[in-house]
Length: 113
Length: 453
Image 1 (cartoon, rainbow over the protein chains, first blue to last red):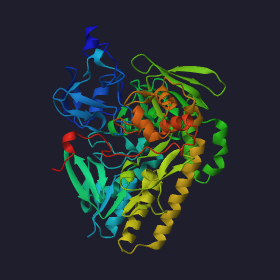
Image 2 (tube, chains in turn orange, red):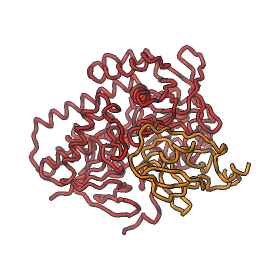
Image 3 (cartoon, each protein chain N blue to C red):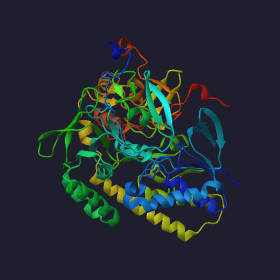
Image 4 (cartoon, one colour):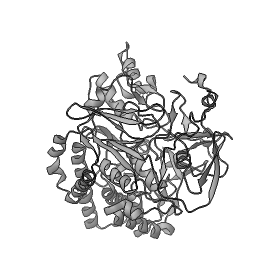
C-alpha cells in the first residue's frame, strides 16, 4: 500500500474527526496536509482545521500509531505537527496561516521502534 | 512602583488584576492563551459566532461579568497574551512569545495557572478520537467543533453530565455517560454536597437532562476499553452488575476531575504536601494564598475549587500581596473572601468523594496498557523496572529509568497514574512514592529560544 508508506490517510475518504457546529465569519486560508489542499478559516486553530478535514494529525514517534491530540489546551503536547519548511507547531494553540504545509508522517515506517 | 506579575488570565488571574488595579498598581498579566478567560470561561475568537449564552447556561452571567471586567481592565494592566513562562529563577521569569525569548523580573508573583484533566490509562486511550473531558469542552468553546458526532463521556467527574448536555445542545448524539464511582459512594457524599445547594442542584439538573433524553448512564463501571482499528469505533465497559456492554461511538471524552497545573509553583519555590483525598501532591499555602516569599497561588492552580473559588482566591492573593507591600487593604473584604474560598474548596473535597479517583482500579490495570503516551511506556515497563535487583522505588528514579513522565508533557498526563503504579509496586502509600519534580522548561520550547535575546 504505497499510500500508507507516504503517511497519507489509508482511506482517501477518511472521515473527519471533528464536526463543526459554528462557522467562522472570516476569510478562507489555504493549507495542506500531506500535499492535499485543505481550506481553513482565519482564526481557526491548526488542529481544528485539520481534524474537521481528516481523522488524525500525525504519526507517533515511538508507537507508530496515528495521533489526533488529546487535551486540546496546550498541556499534553500530543498534537505537535511538522511543516514541510521544518517548523514544528503545537496544533491546538497555533492559528492557521496561509500556506502551512503539514507533513503527518516524518519517519519511514520501518524506522519506527 | 512595585512590579507585580500575574501568570494566567482565567478567573483567578483577572480578579487578582482587578484588585491590584483598584489599589493603584499596574500589574503585568502574562497568559499563554491568545484570549483571556482561562479554560472554563474561554472566549471564542470574535470571528466565531458561537452562542455562548446557550453554551454557558446558568453560568453565563459570571462568564460575561468576568470578560467585561477584563475589558475594563485592559488599558490599566500590562497584558501579554500568547506568552509562555517556561522557567523561573529567583525573581526572574523566563518568557517566550512567538518564538522570541525575554525575561521579566518581579517583586511579587501571583500564579493563577489553572488546572487540567486528571486521566487514567485505559485500553485504546491513544486512538484518534479520544480526548480529555476539558478538551471536549474547549473544542466547542474555542473552535465551535464537536470532537465527534456520537460521543461517550467516561471517567468520574461532575463535568461528564455538564459536557454531555452542552454536546447534546450543539447537536451531538450522546452514546454513553459512564462513571467509575459506585452510586452508593455518591449517595454517601450527599450531605456534604448539600452545603452548596445551588451547585448540587445544577449537578442534579444535568443528570436529569441526560436521563430525560434516554442517554445510557452508568455508575460503578470498570474495565473500560476503547475499540477501533485506526480511530474510535466503540467503547466497552463492565457495568456495576458485572455485565459487559459495548456501545458504538466515534469519540470519547475522558476525565477524572481536575489537577492543578503546579510546575511553575514548583520552580518558584512552593512546598508541596500529599493530599490523600485527591491523591495528588498539592502546593501548601496559607489561607490567603502565600506559598513562599513573594509567591502567591490562586485559583484551581493552587487547589481545585471551581470558577467561583478561583475569582475569590485571585482577589484574596492580590490582597495578600498588597498587604505584604504595606498597602492598606479592607480587612472585612478579605475575611469574606477567605470564607468563600474555604467553603467552595471544602465542597470540592465532597465532590472528590462522589467522583473519586479510581485508585484501586488503576493499581490493578494490566501490564500492556500505555501509561506514558509521550514516550510509549507501558504499565508493565514500569512494573518490570521496579522488579529488578537494586530497583528504584521512588517516582523520580522510576522516571529516570523508564522515561515515564519524561516526555514532552512532563508527566502532566501520566503523573497521577504513575504515582499509583509506583506506590503499588513499592507497596507504599502514594505519599511515600515521592513527587514528580517540575523542570524548566515547563513546556517544549525551541532550543534556539533558550538564550537571552
